[in-house]
Length: 173
Image (cartoon, rainbow, N blue to C red; front, side, top):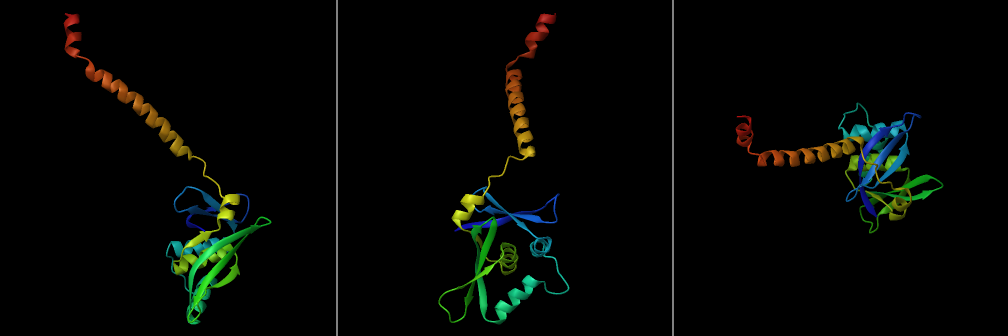
């Protein structure tokens, strides 16, 4: 299992759907997952600590699990089957030795994970098949070009520092 964090939630310009980008903790590799606008809002509301008048569905689920004596231990995006991601909730129940594993959509699992402050994992096979390396940001490319130019200017400045301008004054006389 690979632990990930929510890198960002992006808005699609061509559809109503959103993309949640999950980034590997120790790497830049990301897993993009298309999710619905309601689920994206539920994740964003919690991440931005926005207070809502009434509990959302994910808040209700969190409360029901707690009332029944359970705690969410983690969530896992377990498989990719016919271009559809499948996730699992892992819930510890008092008195039971093994966590219960419950099938769910990744968007709901992520929304519940941010509310319960538990880790989000991705199966290695899923990340190997669907994970992507981000392309360099244009800003980074431009900054790299600027850094190269600054390096050239530094060399020129070093050259100027070796010159003795008093020698030039003597020639003009």
